[in-house]
Image: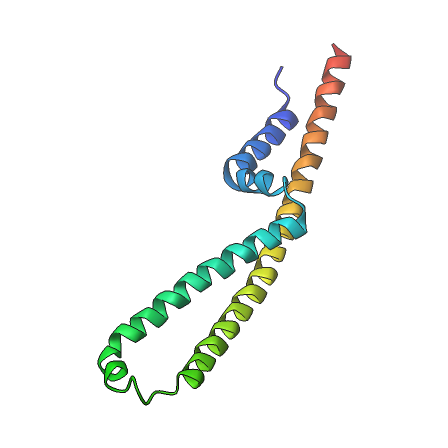
Length: 133
C-alpha cells in the first residue's frame, strides 16, 4: 500500500537535493570562517587581477602622454594615487565578500537544517512502517 506521506517527503527531499542541495551540502563541509575567508581571498585575487588589467589599459591608452612627459611626471604622486585606489578597491571587495558570503553561508545552513529535519521525519516514518509489519 502506498504511503503518501513518505512519497511527499521523498519528493521534497529529491527536489531540494537536485536544486539547492548540491551547493548546500558542499558548503556544509566548511566552517563558516574558513568558507568566508576562502571566498574573500578569491575576491581579493580577482579584484587585483582586474585592477592590474584596468591600470594596464589606462597606461596603454595614455602611452603617448606618458612617453612625452616621462621626465617631468611626478611618479611618487602617481604611485600614491594608484596604490590608494587599489587599497580602496580591495577594501570594498573584501568587505562586500565578507557580508555576501556570510549571508549565503547562513542561508545554506538554514536550508540544510530543514533538509535534515525532513530526513529524520522520513526515517521515523520508515521505522513506524517496519514495526507495523
